[in-house]
Length: 416
Image 1: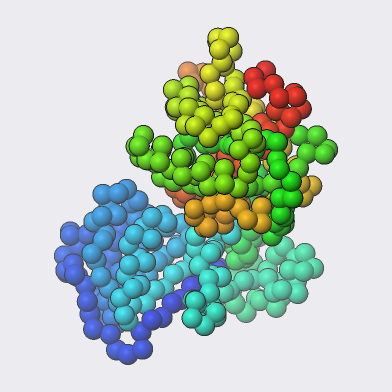
Image 2: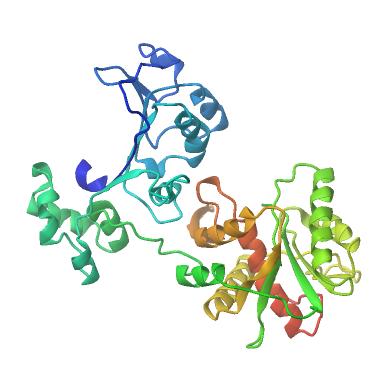
């Protein structure tokens, strides 16, 4: 069932002549390599073969580094850990006469493999990769809503797969999972059924920008420390991300960001801070709030019910996260959120990263074991293949808590 289940092929050829074997690890002694990494020798050029079972730990990735080959073959490439691809495979492609052959059933468009299929060559603006695609439904039948192998593609099925009885059995086994059937058996990639935000709304958001034509009274600041009414509209003035590893770096990054923001807005504009305290706790939230005070005036949204002098920061339960998601989805669908035409950022790529993270956000279910019952915990996350979702979380914080602030006439304490 290789032809059907591996329905999309990605081929990159960077060699134009006979290639000389160049493998640093001995091809006859696989003990120097981690398990599931095969280095083969034949009449063809020597090659590295990786599949989805290659370990993704830092130690194992380090062991893969330094292994060279003229041909790199990725089996089930879409399920390969992205860190292996970026840390091991990409450096190999920088070597002249190296070829990459990636074979896989593509997943949704958020998967790193799917992005490779549409990448453009920066010099020619043509496709970066040669893509061979095999689908068992032609475009005409797909437009008609055909959900099975169409008669125009039957000749693509190999003899060992052309068994009508087994075809019916396979379809029955996929009953209740139409998306998986289309993907694995027909070669039709589809998006996740558990997405938090619809793609059309995100596309419209990314394509819309407006000028700020008045001085804002408030600017809401949403901070993910780890990682409205009918007339309410949102304009994103600034976005910045930074991998902070020390208190000094935190202070430097935040000071730089808010200095740039204050150059964009009047000093009299009030900053309203919305700081997630789930992981850093009140201490981390209070520290960030103190840094914000240096760029005042500032007020802080708080969920602290333990003392009269409330500490800044909010805790997000599952229910609150769902409200946050719902409010942002409403703003996106109603086209009530857009980007500032002169957005403040030190990293232009952060704007693109924001939309990428929104596309990745989906519902996930994790098993929760107790003494008497096995349950599944529903969560919202965009951490696909180890990627971040911090900007998306900050945007959801802003969507919900800014509306709360406005609807309660500026009451900073949230009664939830």
